[in-house]
Length: 242
Image (cartoon, rainbow, N blue to C red; front, side, top):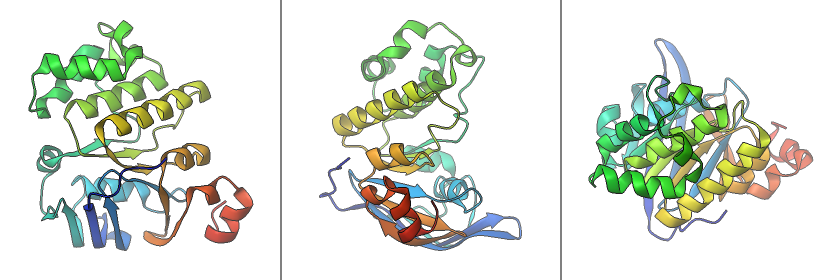
């Protein structure tokens, strides 16, 4: 999928290190994402992918290095401050509010929006028509795929400029995976949205990414084009992770 990456660097990570307590996970991670670009991150379990997203969103502290968003150093920003700046996050496991209705989940997402709640939700439901029939249903009563759509819709209610997605296809039926991919492509196109995607489903990450970074042992070891991911033999040869 080709993004509109002609508007300059939006997100920049320089020599980033992070971990859990005294256990280092990320080791001098550096990369940048252009405005409107869609970048995938691929690697085996335990290589630091979720740790990277949690550090970029401020949920884990940075031990060294810098994170810049739209030219501003946000390394010391809280998760809330980063969200207000325009960084959206859909975590692994979705983390919707299961006891709240679909509408109430969306209203929570609107807390970060500068537009009216009604206008924001109406626009989001046009992008996620499947949710219209479930507005009064508890989020926890939805299927896994529907919960993933709700988590993405809730995130987009805040009007982020970049969305960080952590394993959005995990535990989801193939038919819903296709719908999520189509929805993401449509939303990204309509909103000129920048996407940073952690994913292990090779077809999904290849279809959504302009380029893919390989993360191994907490470091970005190389960058590959999406077509390499579609061929397991090439992926093993070029990246060693097939």
